[in-house]
Length: 208
Picture 1 (tube, rainbow, N blue to C red):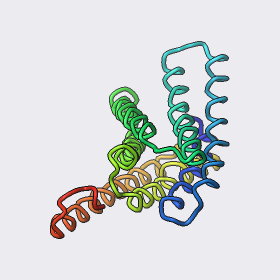
Picture 2 (picture 1 turned 120 degrees about the vertical axis):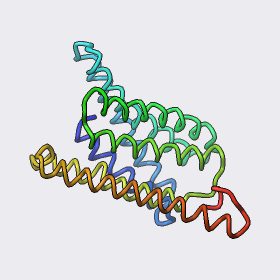
Picture 3 (picture 1 turned 90 degrees about the horizontal axis):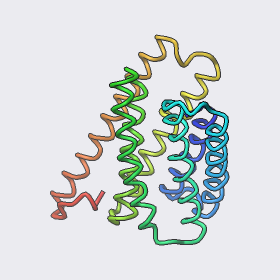
């Protein structure tokens, strides 16, 4: 996905994280989701029209729809006060597709940073499935994950790209470590809260 799209996605995810943490109004955040969602639906349609229909161009353009449709769906759900079950199932589908992008980044493109990034996104979409469809009480945890990802997978990489620094070997190496540490932190936090829940006799991820 283009870095301008990633930049806008960083803003959306940042606001969504604040909403999940109880710091921003849901309907207000929903409006911004709609704005960016519409942009990220129009842009890939245009790119598809002007492309030569090469399979890898279609592959890249399709990824933009994953974000755009998620933002549109979430925005409408928030503004209309919908139940969210459908959004959760959609997020599960997107999480599975994101796993495919993760594997492709390693196997075909040999891009570790991109693979780690897609893996983190897959995890976040899966959390939205747990929250919206399985009704797990993990909004605060999702908010923290979304907040971190808004910066380390979207906003900062976009800014580094705009400055001409993103593809430099030093930055690639540093960002690989940043993503690995972020993933490790998410896993440790999940295991800690799961262990705590079991000690309290609940024994369910729903208590996160």
